[in-house]
Image 1 (cartoon, rainbow, N blue to C red):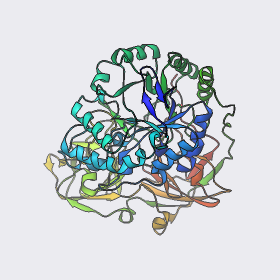
Image 2: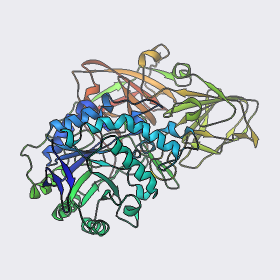
Image 3: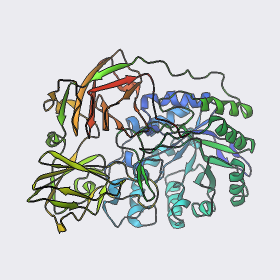
Image 4: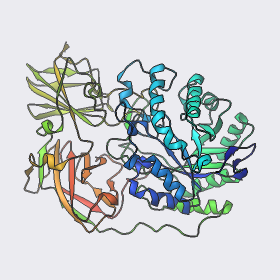
Length: 585
């Protein structure tokens, strides 16, 4: 068996100096049939290690569950890293940030308001203990000390930017050691202020997170850790995007120069991200620093390997830098192939409100409460309903995150959390229906763990309204067969009304990547063969949704579009490549 240790100056693999050249790939953001391809392309760039977070909320969508197969097959992912002759770094949280829904913390955990967040609070620690009981055996048997690839395990994640509860950190250390973790433990924090000291313990190896001014950041880290190897555990070579902004990019040559400076200083590195992947379904996170900003579906991150797994100019710039310092394989990945373009026309559709009975069962509550707490569904859409005797100004304490209002089926308007809207005029009495979209839970800062839905009290002209009904709408994935009996053929050349589900089929000669473009559509989600590709929105920046090749089958394939507002067309297009929107100029 191998050994891995923290030396006075270097990482030591079998007592020999080892420089970590790592790239981040989140297995949960990549179709599992494509893991091997992405790992191989990391090795071809000259990397020797793969790093990944572990999202607690994906593995445990409900209390008492732990899923570890398919796209959540962490063990298989690590085995593929090992088969490629590479090492692995695992960052299990329990908090991961990662622009991921709720920073990876399960939403169900906070249905009890007494449970703490990232602290020594007993209820939180008990839940973390159950999570680690299920997760750590997968990692422990794959440690380098037991013949596997895993060389490092992280404690928490940039904790110094959030708190400084040393008892909490010590509890995590003791917990992982009790499970048999015997590889080195590390923390990562930004090299600013007291974050490194606050986010770690004296006996833990400290690393930094930064994307520029490498020499200065490394000197800051060295001042706080006089001995041991230097490492940038997140070398930010790109950035993520929010809806309504530009597509963030960084200059390939400038990023490569920073990487060169880092390697020239003798430091190890983890490139964040090497391959970003996709926020499929409803998995995207959000930021809220006074304004709520949900993250888009693409997590391309302007990484060296694009969202759909092809080398970019940054890939080759980084490869050239690495080749100055270390041997690099002679093989290079192929460029993106040219794909045939096609138009698909949706032929049938069903109003979403008409399909509500097929998507979820209602529950009665006294007043508007967070949908997740009332129904146990923690992502996506919910429908609030109440009969009104008369009209007036309807107001709520808060809307999380987007609410569309209907009176006897007719649209009244939309309230948006981004715009801090909380009231709407209802012209008369009738059946009020409110379609509420959770646009992504905050993944960073003090609003982690907050509930979703309509936050009461609800008032009509100042008088509180009680006696509501809440229905969760199961739109995580889509069973087209279930809804086929409700859908009706829609002839003509006009668009479709929203909110609705529209259906079509398309032919394919076999599996292969596609790029779905929805020009003329406004906002919603798209599905291929029942799989939720993620959200689209005409406000951009991204203009296409990535369809991983393994989702496509030979012959007939199903396409469904959940359109919330309405479209000007019934056509969607499969195009030859991705369009993530205009860059900042």
